[in-house]
Image (cartoon, rainbow, N blue to C red; front, top):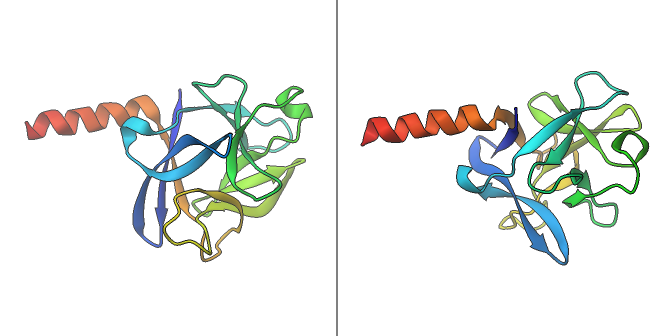
Length: 156
């Protein structure tokens, strides 16, 4: 089943994880509503139990990754198969999405900018439990859509 990522920071709802082209790359950012949320396939990561690659449904072969030059989250297409590439896998640690690199869980979690409080671009170099790290809920895309639709119909 496809997954979407719901974000919060410091107890505040940050909407869903979305994607847009920025500086020639597809970057991931927060603050979008459900209709714009990026859907992912969770692809099992063979070197670490409960870790997954997050493949973008609409861009087959592209994955949620951390850009080495600036730590921003972006959509990356490996030149080799995922297990042989440098694509980051992800696991949930204390409610935060934490990077798994070369079979080792890191302390790097998805979070917001420490220098620009108005930026919605997300980063992947933040310490798990750090002051800028976001809480992330991994939700079933279709189930969540059905629940939202039922709520709208009840209110009508």
